[in-house]
Image 1 (cartoon, helix red, strand yellow):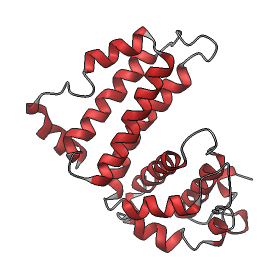
Image 2 (image 1 turned 180 degrees about the vertical axis):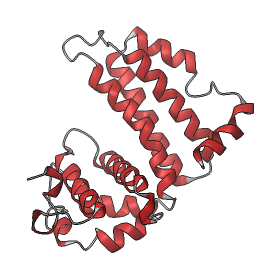
Image 3 (image 1 turned 90 degrees about the vertical axis):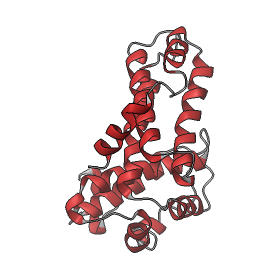
Length: 213
């Protein structure tokens, strides 16, 4: 059985939407809320959900909450596996609250996913036994800063609460990683990009046009 069919009706996904919903439930059940803040995990799971939905533009899905309310919130496979009684997984109320608060287009939310992937790559590349060894941290950290800056310039982070919420989670996770590992490589990247402020004003309009196509 395909793992993505785990939470489809009769373990058989008949549409892309069912596969995405099943993948979302799998992700929520996999993430460990005991070691990482549940709010943050919910945001990152929602980033994945939005990214996957945005890949299926032919389905015309643009509003995350509408899709969630119509296809996930009362889905028995979702309610039967995601609850508010788990100490080590994300609680359903947190997911509901996060999705309700994200009053922005799925395409906009999914644009944060590229930065999230770079952040994940930084974490996966660090050597757990020797935290000074990071094979491609410089490259991934540079990509992370550039992608965050691109999103920041396009969506005016300071004014949109949903944008700011996602932006803050990503930037704070990077800072926490930097503090925990304290490598000269990462400190050098932070200095180089001056905490996401390296882009010139003249580039912003071009970035807006690129992301909104």
